[in-house]
Image 1 (tube, rainbow, N blue to C red):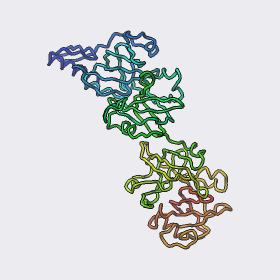
Image 2 (cartoon, rainbow, N blue to C red):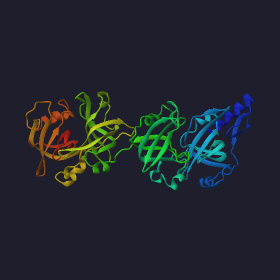
Image 3 (cartoon, helix red, strand yellow):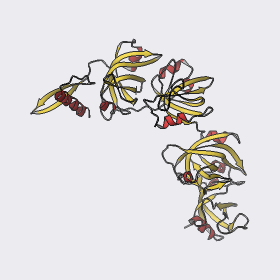
Image 4 (spheres, rainbow, N blue to C red):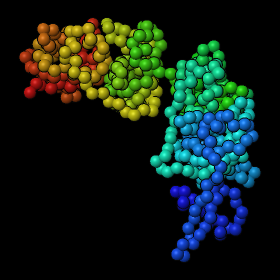
Length: 462
């Protein structure tokens, strides 16, 4: 790619006869009548990150680092420039208005290694490289994309300065001022977006830099929608303006971990991110659409009861889809669930649970660890035929209750008709069960004064 770019530069020079300053120094030679192009790298000594840190302001610097992101290319009084966020395993850099063609700026993709030669400068505490040019170095295997470092506990300490220009994140922050267009609110949509968060007793003003993340990006829209009191995790580059002023690239409302959810008192507000495994039928409850959802991740399971939802969105709650649920932790007859809740779809690699065999956990204290997870029971014997409703007072299409025995203990399980209706295979299979049948059962470990599996699959023992 570098050779192709150099050839284009060389040919442009030949055919236009125009003088042009570039990020590389092309030379042309003829080999067997064919035009070839080579590039001559800068002779400046490449500094380590520590050498850059200790270099005097206004001194010439030369560094090699990896692109993490860049702002929009623009024409600055006839000269194309682009500002670039860079990082390696030792530290971060911000190159301000690097001289660049628009075509080359488009090649500054995350992970690409470049060499920058310019001058070290500082403005309002921000250390940057100015009056600089660059060239691509390394090969396609020489890449580095940073993972955001959690600096929450470094805020308010001298240590935070060690993370200047690096990709960082701040967790458990509380929004204290909603977003403003421009720092003083004098702008309009499309301008930089400023917002204030609080961590501990201190507040910080962060920004969505519109040249980095414009009004059409997810982060711009998310910050615009923030409300005072929202608890968030924010990610971005540790830019400086008389203190850290994160150039924000990602924001999400803070999620509760599964362990935190377990330990949370009843009636407290919780917010979790997890994956849909199944859902019951959508219905209208007093004029409000709701849907109950079975959720699980690698840590545990959840049951969200009557999530507020449109019918169209409920249809999108397919297995593996990641959502964020915000509501209140509740308990009813031993079933722990989330109520009075709303949800939103979030990005994430799909996750569909595999049923865990809990046969040997039945009758032990360990069984509660599997609440609301997809589970499996094998070697069960049917001891009572299915009843429509728990007492047999119903008709076909109602919930279907049946009793099984494992060891010396008996359990009543159910086919929840809002989950698996009368036309489903499992409903028909449970209807047909006879006392004495040996079966394997799959379903969600719902609770009603003990485990009461919401059955999704039945198989006869072979």
